[in-house]
Image 1 (cartoon, one colour):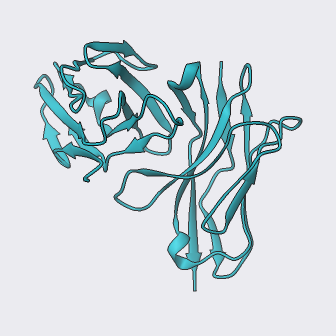
Image 2 (cartoon, helix red, strand yellow):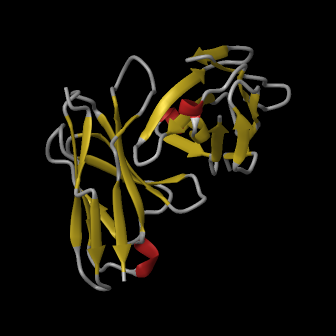
Image 3 (cartoon, each protein chain N blue to C red):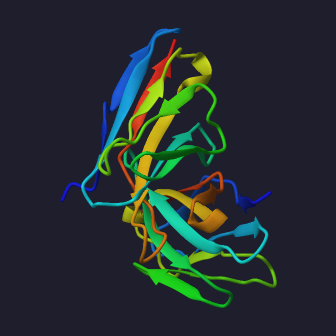
Length: 113
Length: 112
């Protein structure tokens, strides 16, 4: 049982490039989340999903897109990378019932230069 | 809107010292409250939680009591260890379980 896994661990992008951050969970959780963590700040919600085929915006969605075609996977897409997107990105998941604890992945550190 | 305010760090303590990290919140309704811990290079892990007023969450020697009258959820530990060095985040949950609002985090350093 690997929990929540994220790839890659680190990535450097040039301004204007695009990339997809991968997130997979093997706990059959309905809910999945993407957060970003800026230095000295708490986590801010980018997008979330309540199940396959259903996504919704969080607090800071601009510049990002998501999709949820399966229960396990919730990729985050950056189309035109900007320096303001330099951050650490965390994916999380939780079951649909039985509590609200979110389980976090190890994070992806992204630098845009 | 919802918000969480934590004491700024870093907090530096000697091993076996008493720890308090203050957390206060602003929210409508009756949020659930959490403390998460982040060890270096890792994701966040749930440390403890409380879902209603006067509940006490506890885990690994850490405790926090949900105080509705003071809108607080302070984290305490009677005797810290070097292995407790990490960043601690206070968070509240609203929005039907999908809106987790975090504080800015408090870094704890425990020295021998």
